[in-house]
Amino acid sequence: MYGTTDFRKKYEEYANIVNNALENCIATDDKPGSEIYNAMKYSLAAGGKRLRPVLALAVCDILGGNRNDILPFACAIEMIHTYSLIHDDLPAMDNDDYRRGMPSNHKVFGEAMAILAGDALLNKAYELMISHIMKKEGDLKAYVRAMNVIAGSAGAEGMIRGQTLDIGCEGCELSEDTLEYMHRCKTGALITAAVLAGACIGRAAETEYEALKEYAANIGLAFQIKDDIMDVEGSLERMGKMSGKDAASGKNTYVSVYGLDKAARLLDRSVSAAVGALGCFGGEAGFLRDLALFIKDREN
Amino acid sequence: MYGTTDFRKKYEEYANIVNNALENCIATDDKPGSEIYNAMKYSLAAGGKRLRPVLALAVCDILGGNRNDILPFACAIEMIHTYSLIHDDLPAMDNDDYRRGMPSNHKVFGEAMAILAGDALLNKAYELMISHIMKKEGDLKAYVRAMNVIAGSAGAEGMIRGQTLDIGCEGCELSEDTLEYMHRCKTGALITAAVLAGACIGRAAETEYEALKEYAANIGLAFQIKDDIMDVEGSLERMGKMSGKDAASGKNTYVSVYGLDKAARLLDRSVSAAVGALGCFGGEAGFLRDLALFIKDREN
Image (cartoon, rainbow over all chains, first blue to last red; front, side, top):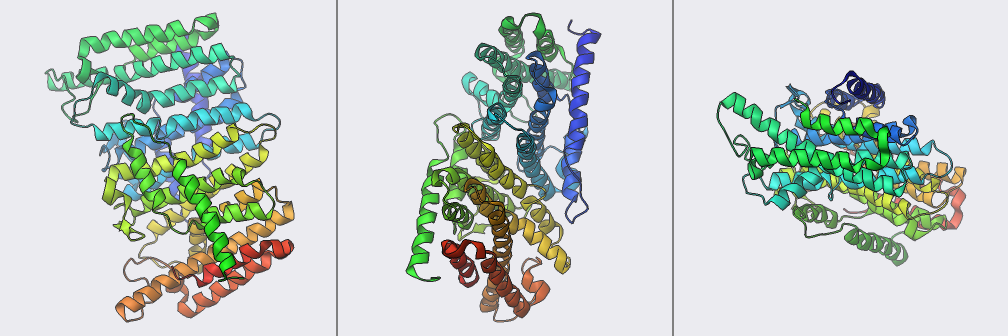
């Protein structure tokens, strides 16, 4: 089904649900200082593929979970992803003037506001999840569990650890193990959290939960390798020459550590492993299988 | 009782409980990138009065709540307070090289790490609260409610709104209303959250909750006015001359807007209002009354 209208339609349907929810989940008021909302909304609206929240929704759907119940968690994950990009782009970090073809947050709103907008998005992610739980009656455990997975993946043992390694390792050679650990933290943790939040809210059985964890780890890896390959292929096209190491930034990538051919084989292997992990779901998991293939074959 | 050994002993007892808990609530591991913990622990250990967590513990105690149940929330509030100071000190924000007589976080660990350490502390605050709730059985509502109060006070409608106003208003004249709104957000919100988290975990009745909210709003105000007065008195001593406006920074303070005398009267009035709000608690609330007086009479 991959590449067919069906997959793309479904993906777009999920992404639209997320985009609509994101537009509405940051309140605006007319009190002093409300310009913080402009800075938050600017980066949140700048979009991208919405891969993480789409994954959360899809997993919850496959398990027969309630879509309104997963949506706040899906949006929270996208907010966390967005705040990390705003802070990553700051002059003291990666110093990127552009993000997805648009001026980065601090180029539009200034550095101080970009720092605060990032902080506010991270905090808003939790506000969103908590206020959803506040409305619930009865057993709250599944919601708290989803939030626990997300919190753990976003912090100093997850995404922020990856960012710490990323800024600490520029210009130095990383071992294969450390490279994988860095990316498992930086990109993989939040992708895994998206899948597992869907599993928690969809009340996955333990075997299903473990299978989805395996799936998530492998698509997270595939996503990062594919990104690195596209970066190099893009550079090759622009420069007309081969550059094993990402010459512009001195960053460690799968291509700089493994070379292009081996990176492509690793990509294939992780996509196969992701698809293989879905065995217990049968036909229900068609969308997740196609998504793994999409990650490999996407062009941006 | 204020100023007596009893009050000071009790305060110190609470502060020690908090300090011990804070020391243990950030794990260390030997995986790559664990230097993030050093940056987090540096600012968290740099201490200060621990006013917010002491308040949370004291309120919970007065209501007969479980101390182990409030402690993670008290520590989370201190982590949120600490992260906000790290980000506030950054060159793009207030550009402060020192905090409590020690080099600020970015002077020791660099700007990139200070940004990440702040992010990690904010996230860790939620991790701490959520993992505590994960261990609980039965009705989780009071815990979620405490976390909800904290989350709301820390974000774009609370502390971050205050910071936004603070950076946006440097050098411009603020109205009395906007000044109060700014400080109610920047300092008041988290102090109020500390008191109300204690109220949630201590299962306060509705009238008690409202009384504590009134108390918190007034000590928050008192705390900020006293800070502003001490700043000016410190500057006067150093410069040997009067400066209505905080000349060094161009910041708006209670003294710059109201003048020293009126600021002192406002301070008195808020401390009286705070003490007055505690009526329904009788003798039980002696520590909270003394704390309001301590805020007014403290020398640092």
